[in-house]
Amino acid sequence: MAVFRIAWMTIVMVMRTRVALFFTFLFPCIFLFVYAGIFAHGDPHAIAYMFGQVLTLNILGAGFFGLGLQAVMQRERGTLRRYRLAPVGSLTIVASNLLANYLIQVPVFLLLVVFAMGVFHMPLKLTLLPLLWFLMTVGIFSFAGFGLTLASVSNTMQEVQVYNNLAWFALVFLSGITIPLPVLPHWIQTVAKFLPATYLVSAFQAVMAQTDPFSAHLPEMVVLVVSGFAGLFIAWKLFRWEKEERIPTSGKVWALALLIPVVLMGFWMILFADPEPSWNKSYAMMNLMPPGSGGSTSAEKNIVLMDFEGTSAATDISKSWKAPLEDANPLVEISLISPGANGTQHALRVHGRPPGSGQNHAPEGASGNLVIPATLNNCNGIEFWIRSDGSRDFRFSLMEEDAKQVTTPEVTFRPLSKWESVRIPSPLLGQANASAPQPKHLILFITPLGTSGEFSLDIDEIKTY
Image (cartoon, rainbow, N blue to C red; front, side):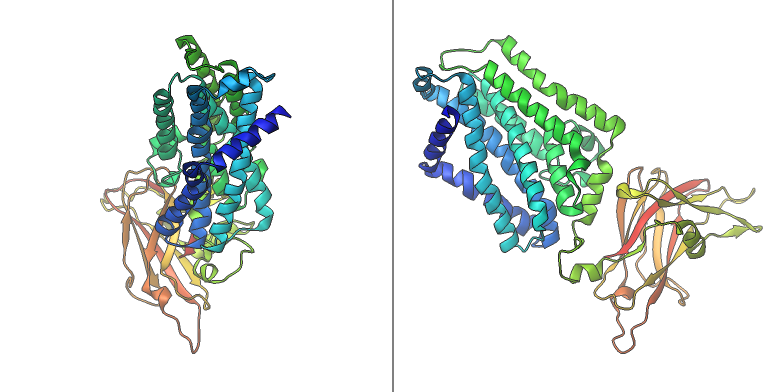
């Protein structure tokens, strides 16, 4: 009962402080308006993707600048001296601070959900609320452990502010909270796999964008829970009642044990469970209409034309894709590979062989037939995922089936070894025949540029945008 009483007293003190009320309830809403209004441009489905970033940002702030800073402030102001004379131990104080922090964050979470859905029309199935609440609970518990650990190894308010800011900026800018991970350099994505905030924000995004189940992110959640227990244990063991008590350097080094499960998880992710396809898929789907969310505008604009899935995929590509011939032998081989982009099962591979002897021209490319539904309106072009080895440029262009020359802008791009998204704008898709709507038949041309020699290009999930 002492834990609940002390937690309640802490909550009452927070409610009596205007500054604390501002940073607890209004400041997260400001972040929501910045992400939703500026970064997402008011797009409800982009807001759904970024909502996980807002929640993670709020959880980090509560752990480091709320709970952690409050713990040092209580010691500095001598508040803990009152409890030292009472029949409570250090574990009671740590547990009550954790409980108070959690009970304060629950209404903040609900407030953000209400604002996101009511003001910005964020699509959210009510069945996902328990999963989001569970992820929020795990995140609060974990980063409370990190915040209390930093508080336990800090001797002064100035020292804990330095530690908090270093941890805060590292997590905010390198874990996908500020800028989505798929658009960051590869070396930052590698670093992000060692940061605990990455596990939380990517899980939020996967739930909101892909409606992933909890089981898809169980290893990451286990690491966050283990880290939370480790942080609370360290905070309990290094707990100090008086500000005159100083922690030795050995105690600070011993607190680094908190990083062991996080580092091990980072290596495990790199070697056995690459999370990048999930990051890319969530990022790619943030502008798509989630199943059952209602509405039709996004669904009409984003139609998958080819995804290379299903039992008849090999037969379909042999009918839809063509390769040039030389002496009745194909210069380009077209086949299916596995896995595809963003966790899909298959993708298309276009592999070119060297031209015949004595020829010095670049190898030919390939072309695929695309059928655009007659009911499709207000589209800007097509979009797809590609990758190669970064050794040459490729030219992508669209042409009507009966036309004699390309009538849309050509896009030249050098794909790297990781999946990237490419868009080809086409005014053809924006032209609708209201009197007699007919499907549009387009041809996508892929042409390798540069010197002759072998080339290989993978392409997946061709859709309109």
